[in-house]
Length: 489
Image (tube, rainbow, N blue to C red):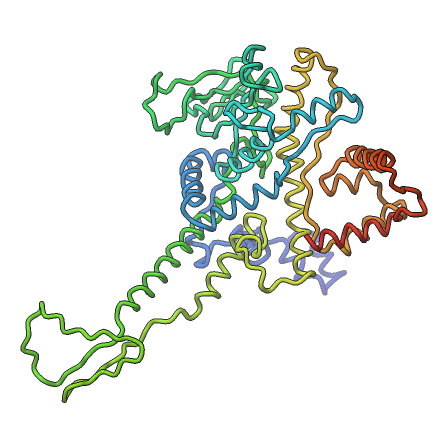
């Protein structure tokens, strides 16, 4: 013990034992069990807990193909997977899609409206409009983890023959098209990983894509070769969960086993009830049976039947298995699955029997936050921005003047129109919000609303209708009328 320590013990005796304890070298096992985090301890409770310390890409590299296959299997064959994919995708894209508009250049705004029409041919597959492409992208990302969109230039002849609205078509590919055989370092110091080339800064510069799907129903015509496509022609859409992540994970991955177990449990319950229904009653007799095994001495029961029994015979009804706890178990599993994929139990199960306005509003608020993140960070931030760049490059070929483009997410249905519309009107009247902002929240463009109102006024003037301020409804009355109309619908 040093002189300083001895002097401290003399001057401050009450803290003598604290100083002695602090001088003892720390044992990592003791630190983790007594003063550290319980979640990092190694004990009987955690001996079977296997974890990975690798990056997201390293963890997913060898599991991604099996995750995609099982996720798609659930989406095809189990109603929970089918419902989850459909509802989440519809929440992202909605019924009208994420629509473009331009407030700066009227000519470009007119073109964007034509480009976003449901009948406009945009995709490489016949009938694929912008809405169809957005819906496919959302479903593919949810099922497979990511989606590849390739821009393919088309000549003016192709534009005329196919009725295209742009000099290119968008080809939607599943992530299976990435040739994962291309891995390693590039000469410029970059990296190639899972078929994607990155420069030294980590920016994707090229994609190695198979000419055909590896699991195609037809024999491969070129022995499954891949083509290097420059990154400027590709939009890679996926939801990023960790920094540096480049591989998108299927959204059903955390609940694949839970969904599979639920599917097996439901099948077992159904089989149990079917087997129980095969036996109605047993005829028991004390006399010796003299017939053969092939004799059909069964008695059928019908409503109102009075059956005579011989001496020594008795009818025994077996105990039928019940389904006690079935609803509670299934409901609990569905709640866990719904929470994982960002849905409420009611939207996943389509069971609204116990919902009131408060609970519906609370769940809708949480879901809308997630849907807004998916729309702005994934769909708009990735696909729509790339599409905007491609349209800017195509503007001179179309003879149009390009303008800055904004993207409006789809409208969200109001839970209680009589309350919510009035609240929006009060926000606008008090100056706490604007018509433009509230219109965007409802999936509308304020310019469209103004044009529609202007057309209404012109039509009223042409028809000789009275549209003076004295006879017109004020803003609040109009909001109440709209709310009542929505409630009736």
